[in-house]
Length: 185
Image 1 (cartoon, rainbow, N blue to C red):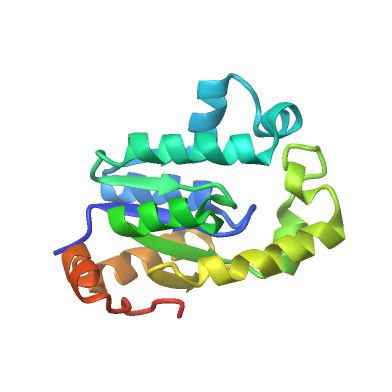
Image 2 (cartoon, rainbow, N blue to C red):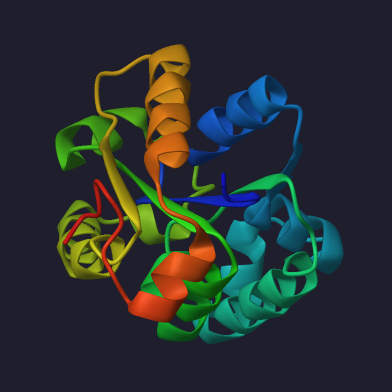
């Protein structure tokens, strides 16, 4: 049985939104982006939310959006870079669907991040490097690990599809606590 919900997790600028959109189109599933849903709900950009309300507020809204997404099936969800680092969000994601870590090396992440201020946590290079290192332990708890640094979007979609088709059912994972094939542990 193929799982009926996929969450793409990983650091900022790892391609989660781009891959999720392409994957959903390929599968004929719905696509959702947590950051876009937050911006729509709050009527502010992510940068403005951080500036006005702080990260703790943002993470609270993020958890609320995750709860709203839980009843949906046949959906590919692009998470924010910090979504999976939050223990409550990570647990909800891992219980609700297949979490897939798009692992992009930091040097490639840095090259992808625009210097326009849209990514508030990327403003300082040293802080960005620390944040990346800190979040790796959380990302390693994803069901599936996919090195996605220099891979094209189409190739990444194929790798994700192959991993999901080979994965056991969510029920098997939840009931036995087994690691999924390709798990990042």
